[in-house]
Length: 137
Image (tube, rainbow, N blue to C red; front, side, top):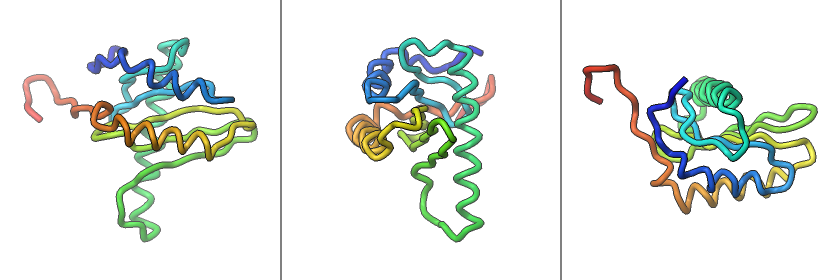
């Protein structure tokens, strides 16, 4: 799948996150599940699958809020597996930051680093919504 986003120059940001101990991979995801950027060494097919999953996961998390009395904006979701974590955070308009880490990872340090990155560079992480051919957003 080809992405309409050309943010390969953002790889260095994601590499800052994968430099954290026990973080395996990181992606910048569009709201429609496309890869905007991926950490160095992450194969394109794995990045595509990770981003599609993250977009679905984020949508489910955001929509669940309405059913449990949460009326504020969705900010982040994490899931813990027996051998690791998936952490997803709002990065900017139409974009999410997602990463996978091992069970030994320091989740507090990782989420703090993600938050600081979004604070520092959030406007650069924003994406435009895609439109169908021949239409305007």
